[in-house]
Structure formats: structure tokens, C-alpha cells
Length: 406
Length: 140
Image (cartoon, rainbow over all chains, first blue to last red; front, side, top):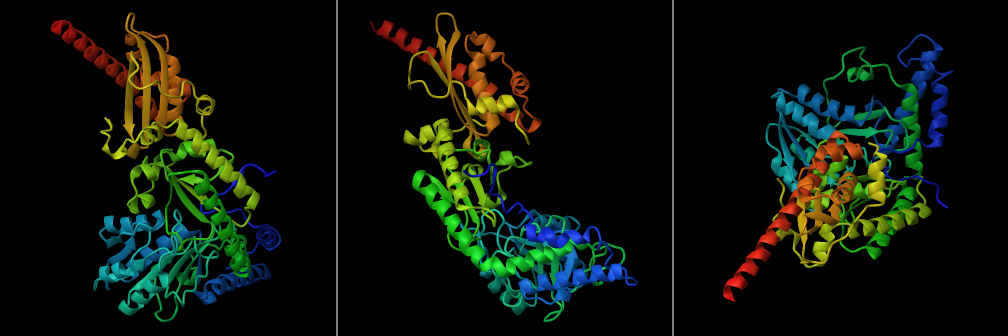
């Protein structure tokens, strides 16, 4: 018997791995020192722990420890990278190349700079699988371009962008390349050297670490990347991010990276198998289901499906003992369906019908079987209740209907 | 956001789901909303032409749990009411009954619109039917 409720929303956040908790615990109580205290053992102890974590994180992404800047999470890392580069290199240029399916932390940082008159931004489209075309990146670069910011893998549809190719273009054109790699780090191999990444955002809570801590990788050589700090204060983190370090959180992030490095390969195989089983099980039993995102170039644990004729939030409600998420407008504060799914050129109706399954380290095959059953029976129930399903079965083309929307 | 117990009840055990046979006499059908907006409600009312009383109702809804609950509740609400009473139903009474939060008020508006659309359709079909009867009488 499976234990309910089932958590299958691991792109939103992940539980902290018990091994991470164990590593963190001493740093709340007996090892509580401030890593910036230079004159006593409490401070040294904390600094040592932070250095170890810096090393663990750097190793995972093939960086040098001193290139890791600790932040409060990926939103801060994205803000710091984008605003920090634009400010530092303002005499060189003011143009950013990004893409429409980026996380809000990137898009809204770009918009804020546009509004302030500090940047012009090119938002590249994606193909029907959610992938950006490197040739589009190349074409978008002007002599004013100072930053390319493209995510490693998308948080909704799991599509993995051709990052190494974009990295090569950035090098060739002499443009700094920032990559929001929150969903990719610890899930698939990320290598800042191989991929030509100059700035990289990552977060602990997506890789079985604690919330409230993340990091920004800042390349120190070839080229040395400079950013202007966005937080004024004590000049921590080599002047790039002031604020007393969250030592326990940083220890947790480090441990999470160490575990990910050791287990990523096997975990990716296992999650891909579970994901494929979930996908096959649903497609076998239901018609009119559509895959959102790339069929092969996608994160191991990601499955994003649109169940035609069924509104996403109502489906979430029907499978209330399973935690997943939806691109439906009803689940967002804005009453707009997912901008990521819409960017694929999908009909709005299918965006409203999308469900994101995010499999993670602690999901089991029994849970996948249970979720398959629950989803299929609930979709059938809701379709029996759906006027759209009835019309489609009668052979009515839903696009030809003149809907009254006033 | 947590759902009210009444929304959950209607969502889990929707009342009067289904469709009356197509073109059945005395049935008015209202379809409101649009798929791209994430809500489509189809409400059917069976109305006695003698006294204008709504004798039965059916619904099918594509939409969130609150949209399904609003339409389910409306089928219960209109049954036994006269046309004039049903037309006078305001969305606010649906909001109140189901404890809908502000972001779900549009679901109740849609349900109110569905009642009006179904009654308008019934009236239109009645007029067409009587026009046919008159035409036949003239021809005879």
C-alpha cells in the first residue's frame, strides 16, 4: 500500500535528504560561529565548513571553489548575475539576449532593467519542443550585447537547451553567458568549462538541500567576469554579495552537491525509467493526451502532459492525494495559463489542460502505478463531465465554434 | 488555496451531470465561456411551456473545481423555479452558497450567464416552433 499523499512536484522543491540534515545540524548549535569572525575558533570552524561546501559545489560543476558566491537562492543569483553584469559593463553595452521561456527571476530582472532604461532585451522564441535555436542566439547578438542568459533546462517542460553550443557562440562573440541551471545541476552533468558558462545560478532546495540558500558561479579566468554587487554591506563573498553567510544552509547545499555528484548517474537512469513508465501507462489508457516539451532532450524526472477537454486545476483537485502542478490559469495568481506552454505554440485550451509531474529521489514505482491509476480514472470522470469532450466526440470542430466570451 | 467544503462536495458528487437528448422539446441549452479561457459551461433546462416552470436541469462543465461546483449548484437552484425567478438569480448568491474566493467569482458569473443563455435559447426555440405552426396553419 502506498503512503498518501504522494509528492510528485520535485521541480517546485524537494525534501531535504536526511544525510543533508545530519550534516547541517551541528551548525545550528555547537558550531554556530560567524564565518567572517577571524579571531576565534568559532569563526574558523564556520569558515572551514563554508570552504568545504564551496569545494563540494565547485566540484559538481567543474568550477574552482573561489568562483562560488553564496546567495539566498537562485532568484537572488539570477538578479545578481543579470543586474550585476549590466551595471558593471554599462560602458561596453546594454543589450541582453534571453528567451521567452526563462524563469520569472530572469525575465523580470530583464524587464526591470528595461523599465529603468538600463537595458534593451531580445526575447528569443522557442521551437514547438521549447528549445531555443543557437543560430537565433548568434543572430541576436549586436555590438551592444553584454549578456546572454539562457536556462539549462526548463522548470515546466524539462526541455534541455543546447547550452554548450550557446556557450561556444558566447565565447566566439566575446559576450558573457549566464545560465540559470537550477533544474539541471545535480540532475544531469553540468560542466562550466565544457559548456562555456560564465555565470551559473543554482539552488539547494531543488537538489534535496534546504530552502533559502543558493549560489552564483562567477568565472574567474578566460574571461574574468565582473559583477557589481546588488547588496551593500560588509563586503562578504569577495565584495560581490554582502551579508553574514548562512553557514548551516551552505553546509547543506555542499552536502547535497556531494550526494548528487555520487548518485546522479544512477538516479537519472532510475528516474527516466519511472518517468517513461508513467508516460507509457497514461498514453496506453487515455486518448487525446499530448506531451509538452522535448521528447528526448528533457530532464529525467520531468513529464508535462496536456489532457485535452479537462481543465488542469479540476484534475489537480480530483487527484488531491497526489501533489503535482498545472499550467492552468486557475492555479496562477494572474489568471493567465502558463507562458511556457503557450510559447510552444500550443492552443490556450491545452495550456489550461497541462499537468507537470516532477519525479524525484524519493518516488517509488508503486507511487508511479498509483498516480497512473488516479490520473486516468479522474481524467475519464472529468471528460464525462466535459462539454468539450462531448462535442469532440460528436465530431464538432471546437475551433469552428463561435464561443460567447462576453 | 483550500477549497470550501461545499465546492468539494459539488465537485466530488456533481448533481445533474449530463445532457438531455438533442432537440428534445421544451429544452433550452446555454453554452457560455470559451476553451481558451479555461471555462466552458453547458446548461440545459427543461421548461414546461404551460406554466414556465423549470422541471429539470443538466450540466456539463470544462473548468476548475469552482466552475464545476457553480454549475452543479445552479442545476439544483433552478429546479422548480419559474423562468422569471431563474433569470433573477444573481451570481452573488452562488458565491455566498459555495464560499467562493475573489479569484473564483468569474465562475459564478459564468453560471449566472448560463441560466440566462439557456432560457434565451428556450424562448427562441419556442418562437421558431410557433412560427412553424402558424406557417403550417396559413398554408392549410
